[in-house]
Structures are given as C-alpha cells and as structure tokens.
Image (tube, rainbow, N blue to C red; front, side, top):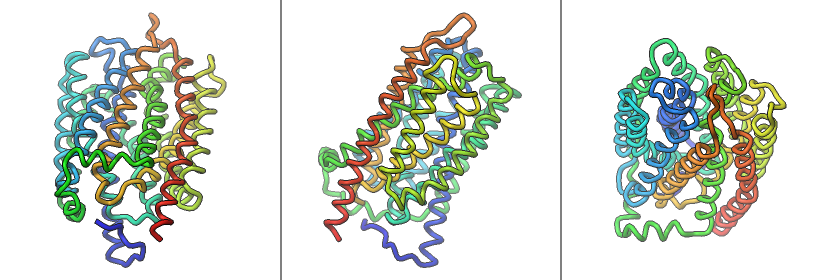
Length: 412
C-alpha cells in the first residue's frame, strides 16, 4: 500500500481523525492493562503473599509473552485485514486480564498475565500499523503525540481509578473493569475503523523467512536496538516506582492515585506539545533532550539516598522527560519500514519492546531485596543501570534519523 498523500481534503481529514481517536482508545486499554499492575503491586503482594521485590516477575511475565507473540506476528499479521486482527487481539487481551482477577497465588497471576501479554503484543503492533497506513509522514509526529497521549490518559484517569477501586473494593476490581472496557473498545473499533487491506497484495508471495529478510536492513536493525535500549532503561525502574515511593519514601498510599493523576496530566500535555516539535526539529534532537532530562531525574530521585528532590518532583520529572523521549523514538520508528513491511516490522518491534521490558523488570527483581518492613534495597544500582542504558539512545536516534532522511531524499 503506498504512503497516504500529504494533500488533505475534508473526507480524508475526518477519516484520519476517526482513526487516530479509535487507535488512541485501543492504546488506552492496552496501556492501562499493562500500567495498572505496577501500582497495584503492594496490594497484590500482600493479598497473594509474595515478596514485593518479586513484583518485577509479574510485569516481566506479561512483557515476555508479548515479546513472543509480537515476534510470531511478524510472520502473519500483514496477511490479515487490520481492524479484524485488532479486534481479535483486544478480545484476547480482555480474556487474559479478566483471568487475572481470579488469581489465587503468584503463579496463577503470572499465568494470567502471560495470556494477556500474548494478545497485548499484537494489539500494539497492529494499532501502530494502522496509524502508519492512514496518516502521512508529514503529520505523523502530531498523530503519534495524540495516540501516545493514551499513556498519559491511562495515568490521569485509569491508574488512579484502578487504585481507588483496589482500596475501596479489591485489587481484583481493576482487572474486571479493564477487561470490560477492552471488550467495549473492541466492538466500537470493529464498527468504526475503515477496512484496511491494501497492504495484503504485496505480501502474498513471500515466505515466512522472507518476512525476516526484509527486516534485516541496517536502519531497521538500528531501530530495534533503539527500542531495546529505551524500554530496557525504563523497565528496570517502572515496576518498582510505586513500591519505592510508598515503602521507602513514606508517601501516603491514599495519595498515590493523585500522584499518578498529576503525572499523567503533565505527560498528556507534554506529548501534545512535543509532537509538533518532533515534526519540526526531528526525533533525534528532541529525543536527546528528553534523555538528558530523564538522566538528571533518575540520578537525583533514585540513585541518591536520600533523594535530592521531593517525591512529587521525582514522579513529575520522570513522567515529563520519559514522555519526550518515548514520543520522539516512537515517531522515528514509524518512519523506518516500507508500507508493506509495517505490521511485520511493528510486530518484531513490539517483540523487542516487550522483551526488553521483561528483561529490565526481571533484572530489577534480581538486583533488589526486601527488608523486614517491606522497603526495597538496591534502588541505587537499578537507577544507575537505567541511566547507563538510556545514554546509549541519543547516538542511535541520530543514526536512524540520518538513514531515514537519506532514503527519503533518494526517492524525491
């Protein structure tokens, strides 16, 4: 399927707006399903009698399963109409999430998260493929900013609501709520998204190993490496932030939802503002600024004991700078594959993303220990590992952006 032309008309604008909104809704559910587990960690560990330092395994089980399914999806997702494939993935995600509500032990919870991850990985890659199919390159940074605003919206609305449900009802209630929301969004997406089949004809004669060979280009491999670094650096920290904030820094549990709400609101505003900046100045420059800001926040907030800045500043700074960095690299990666490669590329990218997240979460579980009062030991080591990985990202951003630019110039 060729790139969408940059010259818009009212019909294409309305279609594009509908697609961006619905894909954002899909991402809201997908991200909420993933994000809610970390802040629920202290509730789940107490109810299911496992150590808080093992929370990384809960996050890692989801992301590892999503990595496997994302890699497998590279062989077949581009052979199916986009919105049907997306709806199937969302229904499976909802089923796995609902299963989590009935967990009775750490191992049964891990099994439910594996099931959710097997469908969550493809849901992400298909959603991003739809955006790349419909939105032209010149406006993709702005569109990606809106879609990635789902991350912030999940923090502003979903995570605080989930925490409130956990405190007032049960830790199981957020799983039930998210599963129901996933089924509702699946139905609306199936009814309202356009039929997207133009990518299929180009791929009918390719073998499954041919799919992998098309993804062996240098800029694609660099893009995968970039994703690995960004997600690995994030997820040695993310699964442990809620527990560290509550148990080490003494932040009140009743205000944790408000903290996520404030951080998510800032993240949402940041992504809306940064999308046009990425279109204007490029992903590499903007992403480097985000990476450096994030480095400062992690050092001051997590590597030093006690932290050099207050809890609110740690959390807000982390959300702000990570939003800048993640929007930048995601916008750049959307420009890397050819149209007929998109779902395959996004599937492998999703696999890399989730495998890196799983690795980061599991490594953090091995680096951390738990005191008798359930507070965590070893966050300084985790923080320094996150900083070291994150600083590898800027040169990779510049390398991928340069290759994408040269390819575009060669075609013009």
